[in-house]
Length: 407
Image 1 (tube, rainbow, N blue to C red):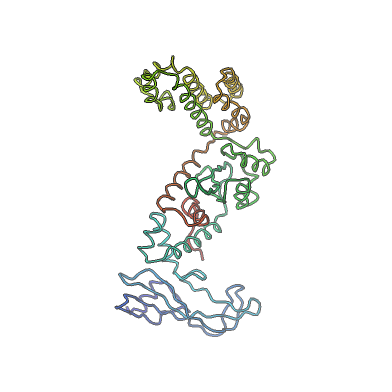
Image 2 (cartoon, rainbow, N blue to C red):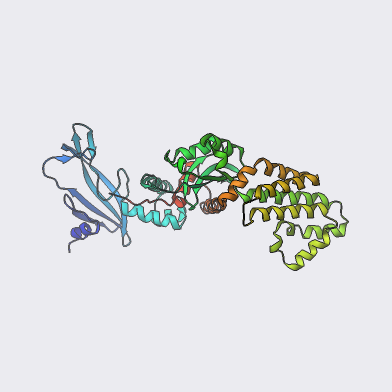
């Protein structure tokens, strides 16, 4: 089999695209495959598929997958057609997409490696610049978003994540299948709206619940977007648990200074025990806490209310749950312990969203898991130059997009 016929088969080319020559440069370790466009008569406009006049041909070169250890390039003079309606149009070659300088096979290989490795490693392997790889990813994400027609929006999750530690945030909208649907700059009301603007308008009518933290900006945006938002917004139990844990810790730190030096040391050593669930504490740890209870009464009381809140949330029935929460709030107010009362006031004002979360059985667990993976992605990438690249990487890795080429 001749080298031209070999590459004709390898590239999957058909008439009128024919491999006319294969050039080997041993010094540069490069193979150049020359492809000609063989046509008879008029050409067809790539926009309207109507016959047009051949105007001229322009030389172009594409990087292809390596042949053994040799870099492989495809070189072709691509015809331009003059269409009466659309003017001068360049014909689309079958091995590359639009204006890309790389073949579709090379781009797909790069994307598969990007899904498993870092941008830096892929850059070194293919000897491509970071900018070139980023443009390949940009085209892939754009294809994936264009191909995405149906996805679940019945239960939505919204959360924010930092592009850098403690600096610059993006809002991430995902669904109950762990699929990121949209990403927007910031963590404001405008960010929430920007995420929903990226979805088809009909999806909001299909949304039954939106799980989020108690951010005033997100709550305000959701109420503006949905007329019956208070029936759909659900507050994740993780944030209630976090508030209670912080209250227990604050009360313990306040009480510890009233203890004798010997007791203070033991109270410090057992500081993490108060933050755990009672079922997760071994017997010897529970014994150590029991000995401290007479000296840390407020801490023990706060820990008890933390466990009571967990029991209410994870009770098997939602019937009577509102009353149980109201009783829990009233008992905390009677303690007059300020950190606890602050949490109780938050729960009281957001009780409608807490009850929605319990009724729908939803949480931001998946969103938090995606958030952890995004943070790991950020660390592996050693940061991102700008927000656009960060958002693109999130959609690439967690958008579950179909990024294949469809002809």
